[in-house]
Image (cartoon, rainbow, N blue to C red; front, side, top):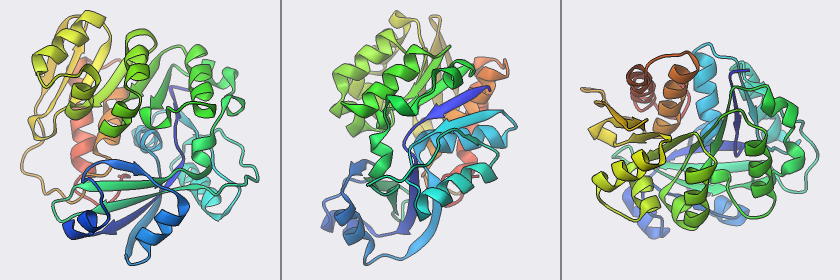
Length: 308
């Protein structure tokens, strides 16, 4: 297997809203907020669902990699309930090896309410459900070791059971890639993320907000110095300013796609990571990998949802 993703197994529920809805519900545009099941139902009550699809950040990337013809798998915790069954079916339909055995859990399968505003930005309200209860017993070292790269998401990082799953996966991996996931996620776990980046990861994906928060600076020169000093492989997306990769003291840049109609930014980072990792596992140059990431992210933002 080329890449094994481990992340939150979340069913995405997409709805269109106006900015007033975000303000009324004290939501910060373009971020992810963790909520409980009651708040999820309360927010959804007055909305119209546009689409429901198996989601989760790393799962979206893994599906993108599968669609490019790569042999990939995914581990994510779901309940043996209706949503859990739909989640598994969704991955299998995309030819992803779903390597988690559903069990009867006391907590339902997780859901993410994705609120799309007229400017195409997405604001996420996530009820993790049983996805947030993944633990070391859900991780099989033999499966991890058979994969060339393990791809993790920052969203998964938390104290307790998820952290044990994370540690076990890293300890048994041949190579580890991780997405920092979200600004608030970095701020919640900053010290642990800095330790991970410096000592345990090989490839790091981030956007500008996330990398600035990680190093406590708004200077991109500081970002470059930090990345070059560590000697890891950093891949940073910069929206309409394109993307950049830093490896072995070298810097590579790629422009954003031009003249495209943006419909929904959901999954842009996930599909960018898929394209870039496709390049890595198929021995493409870093420049070509950036271009592949840009190609996939530009496709996904022209439609609603995070699956091409």
